[in-house]
Amino acid sequence: MASFSIISRRSAGVHFLTPVGRLDGSTGPMLQSEYDAVARGSAALIVLNLSRLSILTPSGIEVLLRINAREDSADRLRVINGSRPVARALEITGARERLPVMSPRTADPTPI
Image 1 (cartoon, helix red, strand yellow):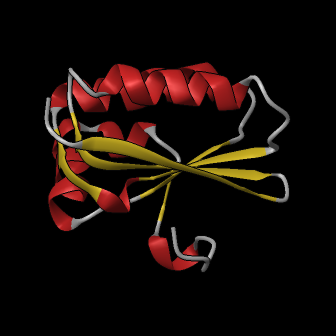
Image 2 (cartoon, helix red, strand yellow; image 1 turned 45 degrees about the vertical axis):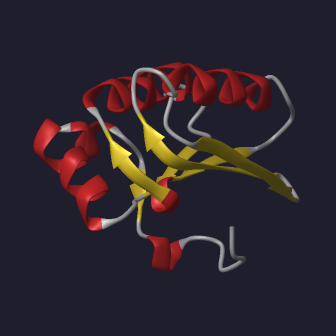
């Protein structure tokens, strides 16, 4: 498995999850599990920051879409777009339109 980790931090009612490395079929379950644990908590907003991903595969995109489907009615998920290749992967697969993507410029200025 490629090097992968998740930085998790909370600031007031917002919980930030930042996956680092390659989000694919082997690492996606780790993100799903971490997200599920956070979602059971009291965070008013959960932000997935994709800026530290090096690679986002179709399997990784499926994890993001499953997470979004779970939170769709709660409207508490936001996704910070990542590098150009990550943003391109979301764009060409049509996932960008299905995810609540925000620009890194409009996100919390605190480094993650």
